[in-house]
Amino acid sequence: MFEKSVAELSRALGSGEVSAVELAQLFLARIERFRAFNAFLDMRPEVTLAQARAADRMRAEGRATPLTGVPVAHKDIFVTRDFASTAASKMLAGYMSPFDAAVVENMARAGMVTLGKVNCDEFAMGSSNENSAYGNVANPWNPGAVPGGSSGGSATAVAARLAPAATATDTGGSIREPAAFSGITGIKPTYGRASRWGMIAFASSLDQAGIMTQSAEDAALIFNAMLGFDPRDSTSIERASEDYTRDLAMPVKGLRIGMPKEFFGKGLKPDVEAAVRAALAEYERMGAHLVEISLPNAELGIPVYYVIAPAECSSNLSRFDGVRYGHRASEYRDLADMIKKSRAEGFGPEPKRRILIGTYVLSHGYYDAYYLQAQKVRRLIADEFQRAFRECDVIAGPVTTSVAFGFGEKAADPVEMYLSDLYTIPGSLAGLPGMSIPCGFGDRGLPVGLQLTANYFEEARLLGVAHRYQQATDWHRRMPGGIA
Ligand code: GLN
Image (cartoon, rainbow, N blue to C red; front, side):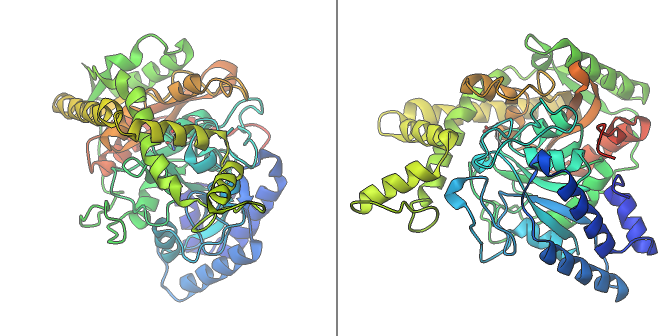
């Protein structure tokens, strides 16, 4: 039962083959058994089981949705009333929120059962989960490899089948990159589709919630409950709710798939390129047309992102001052000293680095040279995608240049680490929906992801295109050894 997809679990719950309580117990036991992966930060079995009992009652009373009783893990970036919410930072150790994030609330309303909170990079800053204040997360495919980041706990939870689904967040690639490194399916919707209410903010103009699952079909089922307009988030987009499963059966015959030539250039490792090209050939066999497109400014994505994201983070993280939120130093001389010591003790090195960069690029005299310039290039990149979408329906390519790297391999060199998001950041800057689906294995038997990007509000099409591939292949069903 543990290896079943959300769709399969939904059917098993519907037929009475299994109860929500039994499922919760099964996954809680697995999480305990695989403690060494360090995927979970907070578990409260009594809370989980109470939610599962309520789900079983919903089913018994005929009030069930397809997701009622399906377990889910939440990235520790979403605040939750019944579990601690830390953003994997010492700054928020033990913090109990008075409310649930909108995404958590939406999924709970559908009857999903929370297994616990999962590890991530501190304030979602990172690409390997090595920036968590609570330790590294193992990649179940290879204990020496990182699971990716910042949603590393979410990725490992789904890859090791400790949860059939996990929420995640993407600012520059934190859903697609860990999904690729961990051999699972991950999708971020169009910016504004998921409410950011109750999502601990990193870079507000980029942060977007999404979901990690085994398959595109599962992601579509969850999006139906998870997404939607929320007046409490001023950047939430007011659009009628839709059925994200509606295009799952749509054939890809005649679909124009754009391959950005800049994403197949130098830097891309041969093992990743081979798996991605094989996946594109599979789409061709199914009747899709491959067209070469160009995103000439995509390579500026990283420098642009590392101006805008730190700028926004330096502002967002100012609330952690030991008064309004966060850790407070135990000894201090006066107010200024208290704030200084609290922040020095509470934040790890990566948030500190970004606060410094962000404060610098926003300061008088540098604002125009850096921040404003970065915003202009951001617009150019977004416009390039719009030009590309005149020639193609979806864009496909690699998610990362290599398969998962080893612990410590990039940790000493922040710029090297930042380059991990070379192919994912342009889509994030443009606010486009994007996903990663498993498409094979590369060096050291580690998974490779195929990145698919669609135009604004075309999540249903994106999920359909991914689903057709998953109907024709079984990469998404492969499981790491040793987790049975
Ligand atoms: N790796 C990128 C960063 O460190 C993206 C993180 C994210 O998407 N949350 O900022």
